Image 1: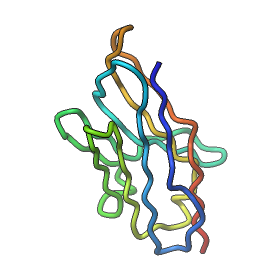
Image 2 (image 1 turned 30 degrees about the vertical axis):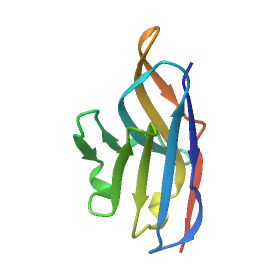
Image 3 (image 1 turned 60 degrees about the vertical axis):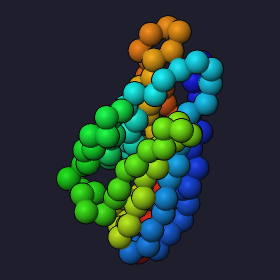
Length: 119
């Protein structure tokens, strides 16, 4: 079983920055793709940014130029640097990881971390 532990959320003023981290822990697994999703109240969960094992990156149009995703494979950790935050970025941010473990290819979710941007 793989667990994803997120950190770095909080309250920030508009224009500020936050950095989210998500560490995958467990036994005998290989991390494939990792991504960040977010869900605002009353809205569907949406992809914010993703990064494959080969380093291919994609972003939601709404965060391009402001957010940056990166990963440290030695630590099985993915990061999301969020700059120029605005109130529309307020949401619960969830980490997602696609891994290969003893059961094959599996997808796991973190518990979520709240990001609140005040005007």
